[in-house]
Figure (cartoon, rainbow, N blue to C red):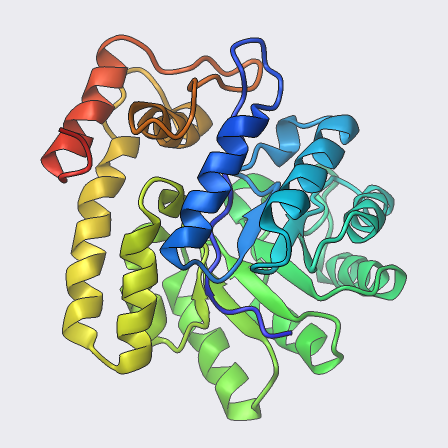
Length: 304
């Protein structure tokens, strides 16, 4: 199974009391599939994986697999601090019907390349599913070097990389080396505002959180890339970048509250989500911050 194209990291909707909002989840997933996305990634950063109990993780996977019903591949985040916990999550993901799993390097304990390689090898050995490395140093405090990724790809340990490192130079070197060696390694960018640059580096797709809000932009951009229409690729990137300003307009908010908080608020304003409730201890955007997101949606033609 080749996973490529647009694979949004699905935002997890919550009810006002913090339960999984299954109706909103179904609406959002179907909306993205109807727009033509090529896969869905649940329990990533946008999917609140680190805020989720084991019970909530299982609930999200079960509902996602049920709703998708085989229409596109479902990638499941199995992110945790240690290898044994990651393997436990991976086993559950496989049991519940995941098509692939996504893992970061272990975190909290300070580890080096030797331990990180062993981590991915052990996960691969224990769970027979395609394994994607999630490169997100801002959260796990280590950058996955191209040499490390290439070594694991040669061994058949890694099927792909979800790159949220922000290091476009490293991404280009990795893509070039992958191409020169003809390695079977899918490279997906997680950065909404530089997808066009990643495609110029021969990326195999994107994992844009913003596609929860507007999946059509990214699907059309992927198709333009496949057709070699670079002018349209750039035009659509400019549209996406204007819309991405929703994550910059909330006053007094940073990080998860500003980013995923803006996605949830936009989805609420668009009628996809019932609420913009965030996981504890994060508070939902309200008041002037909600209006600031609405203003960007109006300016970009998403809201009347």
